[in-house]
Image 1 (cartoon, protein in one colour):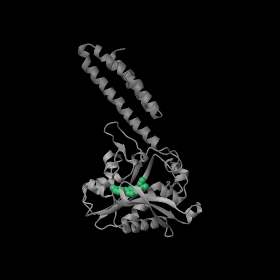
Image 2 (cartoon, protein in one colour):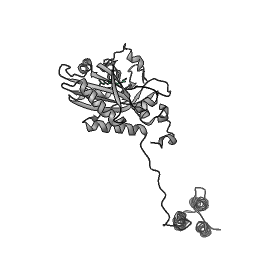
Image 3 (cartoon, protein in one colour):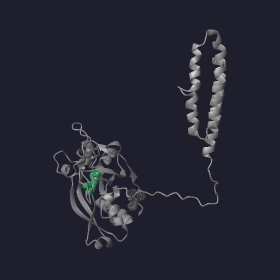
Length: 334
Ligand code: 2NL
């Protein structure tokens, strides 16, 4: 058979296969058989080069027209089959009730954090944020906790490099230092955020947890301001019937320092009179010097506490690890 005579039957068979394919997979198979790199029609195209020079233009033209015809048929069949695949096989009943999407909710720790922040905003505090990867200066030295201080041991953390010693912050105080370095008093901020300690996980410890710290700096700030503010916020959070107690304590960054205990019917039910809730105190003059504030002019207080602990008391949760397991049976209860 001459070259020209082969074109028509190959085209006819290609068109038949394409138009006769019943689904997209069969269509693709037909494309490969006829137009693929080793396909029948492609084979014909390859033969074109072997023709005598004077026959090439006419043969080339014919073969191209046929090829376009096949490709057009392929495109049309593809569009047809795609439309058919997209149409539902059964009619749609528009009177059926809709499928309700499950509504998400905030993690209990986020809810508690939001509540605490809302209380502080009512009395003029702003939220500040800062890096979780810190340097030793902002995490310890600026807070009057030098390298040989015992608090370095009790707040052991994760160091990221041996030499430059970047570390994961052990408290959000480092953010407060950064805010004071950047702006002059007065300061009224709270700093919630994730902190890290080299602790083994058990029912009351986790190597990462959420903390919130607060800082108030102005002229003539007193322990009375500290107590009044803390009482306002904790009563909003835990109910009006809670009693608070300020017990003398030691922190290197505050002087005097206190631990805050609270008592409530809930605490009594746990068989205890008081539960430790937070730490606080008047900002140490050395901390003010470190950020360039004159401690003779400015005074202030600061506090810090773990958000998990508040949430555990509030909801009666007995294991801190539940907050991090992402078990929906637990999370759906809040
Ligand atoms: C706790 C309680 C506390 C602070 C944090 C603070 C921050 C600056 C200056 C002074 Cl920038 N103090 N924060 C103060 C008292 C207690 O945390 O139980 N910590 C282990």
